[in-house]
Image (cartoon, rainbow, N blue to C red; front, side):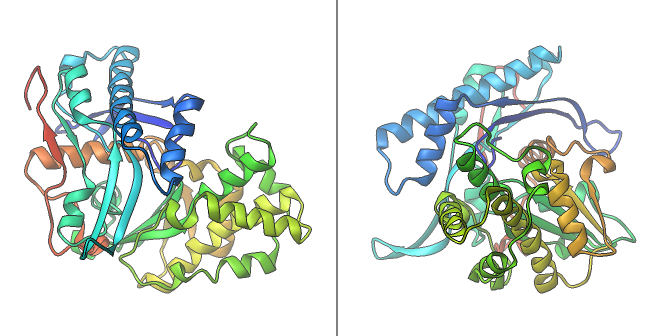
Length: 379
């Protein structure tokens, strides 16, 4: 898969053995080249897109996804023929969960690129793709889709846990102590790394794409007036289930924040610090507003789990709550999303639902995805 940051492809080989939770024999991230990433982001941000460009990008990303599978198998010395199934989330370029009037009808939708037919043809392996549309068809928002796998991996009998993913967008899965899948609460809390990354790229002239280890933010001070203004965004008051993306917290949002902050005399480090605390503040605010109880543990995953400045800001706002990276629970933080979609693909071919209606707002549990048969061994 590739997330909202569009940095590249996360590929995981996952072993569903009888020994219990899935094991991770191999994982790697294959960065997009700068030209491809720029093209992906251009499509994500564009108000209108050439149909020719969309088709070619869909097929190109299919080739890159297939190449990632082949490369990982080769590098890890795992025979491609030993793999039963590929789960491919692809690259989201539009996510429109809220209905809008279109041709006289109320329509919502989502689009992930990376043609599954290419993946199946190049690898010979059955491929499950397009996970989100079925949940939308069932009345859901098509996101978040990892809460069920969060419960499978991290549910606990005696602890309330909040699994907090901080990717481009941040989302939480609430796992109450001893609760089943029906007790899950999950939603997008707001911006994750997206605003921070855009500002860092802007202030460094593109030399950096993110704030490595939170160093820039650590050297700045949070501007409280700017933070209060950002926290007045109406999204934070909406009740779950809810989801958001680049359409709200993307490049336009970050550029407006940067321009106004500079006009008010903030230095670059202070702007990055403020954007970082904005992510932490929006997460803590979401817990206060929308979770039924205070978590005992917050488990960080996604790229933001590797930002100690962000983690410290969140821990300070959640005084007394344990905040730790998911690696401390035996799960690779970088691989977690890819592992989750492998788990969802497995549920699909077993005919089992992969969504959590309490998280997405769907009318019912639904078997997700489209199955594209491979040319070789069939699942």
